[in-house]
Length: 203
Image (cartoon, rainbow, N blue to C red; front, side, top):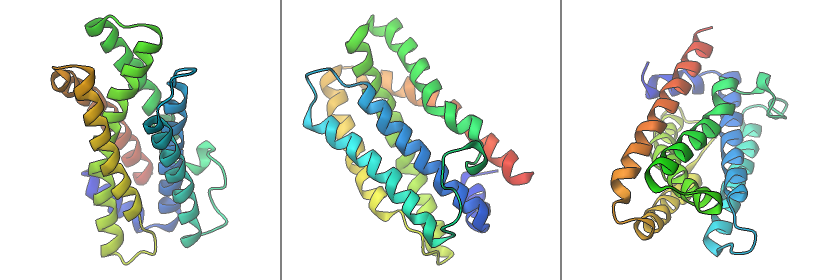
């Protein structure tokens, strides 16, 4: 099942749609926490603070959107209130672990340097994914005349992607070669997540 078909099925069902919004909120929140965890104890840039704050805002915004569907559901991030919870909860962590392994192998990094490099590449991969997923989701919301909207998130994610590109260019001259490998790793994570979503929708 293609991403469009999965999202159309989700948006057509209020319960699934509520869980989907909650799942996106969970992932944005997890991303924000990952960014904060990668910070240096003292040398924290304005850009990193901005990025973490905006990811937290996205998590909050998506939670708020739930009220447009049913304000009595998805109060927590418990498994019962997420779609494909196992895939969802391990997605970012697994990506982080695999990216760290890749960076250790190719850049021989450790400690904070490894954390920061992982932040750059993981965030880049996630922003590339968001740049694909959110516009498709918004198109479906618009087509179905849903009151839910993610337009503000789309604009900010586009900005994040440009910011990550600028930082990656500073990090390594051949950043693109490595970024492409990281994208392949993320694609496998995403494929697994989509399979989990499809199974849940079909059940």
